[in-house]
Amino acid sequence: MPKSLTKVVYKPDSQSTDEFIIFVNPAEYKKWKAGDRTIPLAEVVDSFKVFYSNQGAQGILGAPSKQQLDTIFSTTKDVDVMTQILEKGKDQAGNGINSGSTTMNAARGSLIDNKGKGMSGI
Image (cartoon, rainbow, N blue to C red):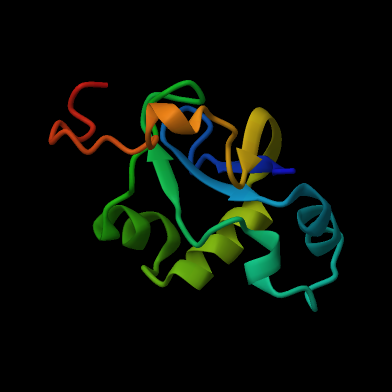
C-alpha cells in the first residue's frame, strides 16, 4: 500500500506568491520537527527534490533555479535547502498525495508518455 505524504511549504515573504515545497513522510517529519534530529533526513523527506511555484498553493510545480536557491537560502546544496525548508516551512496535509506504485490496467500500457510530446501537451 502506498504511503501517505505531507508537503512542507516555505514562503520567503508573506506578501509573495513564491513558494518552495518539499514532500515529507508525516510521522518522521513530526518527530524531526519536535527535536529528534537523530532521524536521517533521507527518512524524513520523500525525495531530495525541491519544488517551486510562483502561483501560490494551486500553481504548477517546477524546479527552482540555482540562483533562486542561492538568493533565498544562501546555498544551493540540497541538504541545506531541505533543512531550512523543514525548519521554517509549514506542513500541509496532502489529500491524495501518495508515494509508491499506482494500480492501473496493465493492458493499457505505461503511465509514462513515450510518444515524444513530453510535458508540452499538459
